[in-house]
Image (cartoon, rainbow, N blue to C red; front, side, top):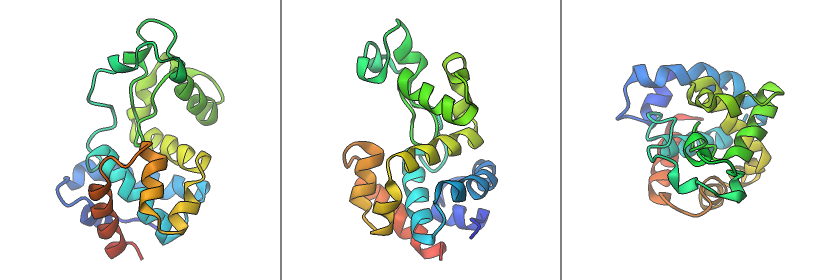
Amino acid sequence: MNLTISQLKAICPTQSTMKLQPFVEPLNAILPGYGIDTPLRLQHFISQAAHETGSFQFLTELASGSAYEGRKDLGNVIAGDGVKFKGRGIFQTTGRVNYRAVSMHLFNDERLLTDPSVLAIPEYAVRSAAFYWKNKNINQLADADDCVGVTRKINGGTNGLADRQRYLALAKQVIK
């Protein structure tokens, strides 16, 4: 099961093909290794990704990150951590502790603590999102076709639920 550029464009019709193209190969190469390997799982992953990134437009949080300053729950214990470790990647990895976990998983070292911008590169944005998806056992919710449950795992609440459902409906039309 390979996602094509025409399928991704149908799910994200307002985005340019040129902006979507860098994601197709990483999505196809990476997702199966994380168990995102059925049409329903892929539909849910892509719909959440499309919402979180504004149709694959933004891989870095638009806010400054200052709201995360001093957040011990995110491991932001050094002055400047909030801005340095603001959300990046498809599912917006946020905070020193989460960047460290992703870095250890992806590279077996702490390089993302030195250069967090790596998560804004499509390949690593996909890898970090797939890691998050697997760690949070989201395949179970996708298998149950539970968009609300998937959204809660990705977002922590139901922000943007209608938009996520809209993307999911589009994904279901083109990913079979």
